[in-house]
Length: 421
RNA sequence: GGAGAGAUGGCUGAGUGGUUGAAAGCGCUCGACUCGAAAUCGAGUAGGCAGACUAACAUCUGUCUCGAGGGUUCAAAUCCCUCUCUCUCCGCCA
Image 1 (tube, rainbow, N blue to C red):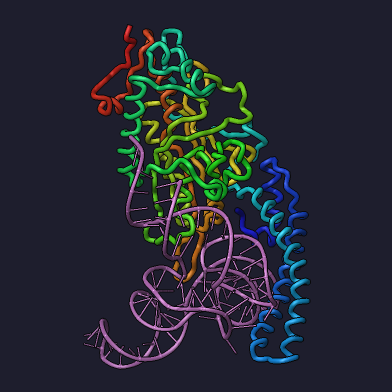
Image 2 (image 1 turned 135 degrees about the vertical axis):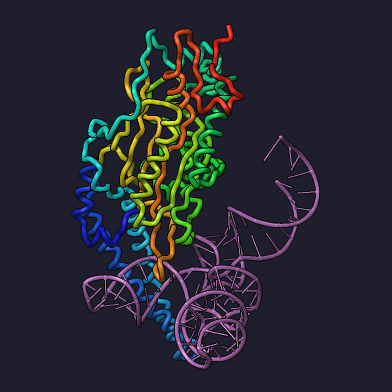
């Protein structure tokens, strides 16, 4: 949610923002609606005041005077009812429209139409060199007997996968490695609920704009989370945080569910784009004055994790046309994927400033004043995509996968995932 | 799933139709007393929205909010309906 006050005072800021993001929102029309709405509020409040005044007098009156007063109030009620109905319609329409407004991008965010406007910030590491024909992770994983798509498809349909044998061990190794690193950096580990109320989805900014991406449990009015960002952000909803505890850092391991609506035929097969995957997500509640420093720290933490695994990657500064509605800025971390001869997103790191905090009412006390916190989130490790990057970058000519050094101690000293044949 | 109890301000807790946004206590803030502190005394102490004023903060006025939504009434924390959540007991269950 945006700052309404700011919209009224500086509509041009939002007009520019909306244009930069390729969105279609009529700011002037919304302001007109706001004015109508406020006029109604003014009228309704006035009548209510009159009613309240009369209510105080009624018990002091008696006889005809009392009856007259009561009759007058009855009449007033009819008038009030009509106004209240009109007001609630306007309020509903207004809040629906406001919920579409995006956050305001940071000045360092490049302006661009779509993904083509994203800017490479920098590269880290070197591309691995192979003196044999590389395989993709599906070929490698299937041959090693560590992923099984066919049976997953039989049971659940497309975009589901079984991890098996050493892939399961690899997953747990990744989890242990990442949590060890994050706990050292002061993150509190959490395992959150994966079913959440609509309010949490809305508060986090995934609703209403991206609602079609998420599974709904019709019987219970709950939603399967697409990322632990949702329960993490809503964790402190309606709370006033202790300023001395900021920045509050959390890391949650959860399964994530995405419908992948609108991506028919894209990235079919393998671990890259599935309906269900496990992920460790970082989340920070930050002091607004330090938010951009904390955000760079968050990006560094993500990079530490990926660097530790020895992967080559680049950091993308995502442009206005490609960042999410709640995001003020977003970095994607794209790992080198040899079989595709290109970089693919395996993690993303966003600062949402006060956008989520305003919807979820998360504040801290600064002297006498209460201020909204800033919130930011980053992937720590999306297991499927990370595993894909590891399998492809650490393959050898025999189709084995060398286990990155740092994970070996979490796999009982195992060095290679070998073909069992 | 069955039976019962409950949901009030930061917390405990009173309040069953009319100046109750809400007693009392605790906590917190400010002040007095003190060399300082404790104790004591005094004052203050929710949020949203709209309006006035302001450079802004603040302040003032009105309004809404006693789990959520709806209803009865001139008037609802209080009466009625629906829902949600919490607790206790039974059943089932990883």
